[in-house]
Length: 303
Image (cartoon, rainbow, N blue to C red; front, side):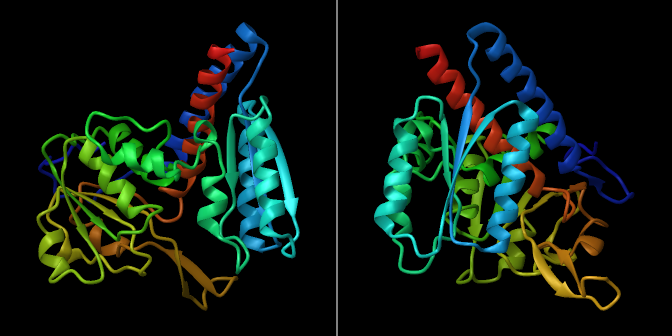
C-alpha cells in the first residue's frame, strides 16, 4: 500500500476493488449470520425492474447473486416496458408495506415517459438503499447531519480510499464530474471527511490546473481517458469511476473497457490508482449490501 506523499519512483500501487469488495461482502455475511442467530431474521432487498434492457437485467442478476451469497433475502418484481407508471408506483408501495423488505431498489433508467423522480420519491425513506431520496441527499449536504444511506458508488469510492490507508482530513480532493449519481454525492462525502473539495465539470476553465493541485482525484465524468498524466501531481491517489468502451480490434468483443483516467500513463506518477474494470465497480454492489444490512439491523432492532 502506498501511503499518500510517500517518496517513490515506482509505479502506483493498484487499489484492488475486487479484493476489497469481497472482504466487505464476507464481513456483511458474518453480520447477517449473527442477526439470523440472534433474531431469526435477515435483511431483505427488493429490486424492481421495468422493461427488458439487457444491461439492466445483468445488473439485477448480479445484485440478486450478491444478496444470496451474503445471506440477504432477495425479492423481485419484473414489469414489462408497457407497464404504466401507476403499476410501478403500486409495486413500490407493496414493498414499502412488506416488513421482510428493508431495502428497495428501482433499476434505472426507467422506460421513456415515466417520471423517474416521482417513482424514486415513492420509496420509503427507511428503505432507500440507493441513497437518492431528497431527504437522504439533503442530510448528506448538511454539516452535523447523517443520512440514513449514502449513494452506493460514491460511498464505495470513499471506502476504497479509507481501506487503502489514504489520509483524507485536510487534503485537496478534486471530483471530475457533477452527476447526481456520483459526482455531487462524492464531493459531499469527501467534504464530510474534511477534505477541501473542488468539483470540475464541463464549464470549468483549465481543469488540468485544478487537478494538478489535488492529493485525491475522483474521476466520474464519463469521458474515456480524459484525465492525463500531466493533470496529476506526483503521489496523488486516483479513484476512477468511469467505464467507457473503446474500439479494440485485438479483443474478441471488438472493444475494451477504459476509465476516465489514462491508466497506463497516470500510474507512472500517482501513488495509488484503481483499475478499470476491477476498481470501483465491485464496490458499488458491496455498498448496496452494506446499506441493506444497516437498514435490516435498524428495523430488526426496533421490532
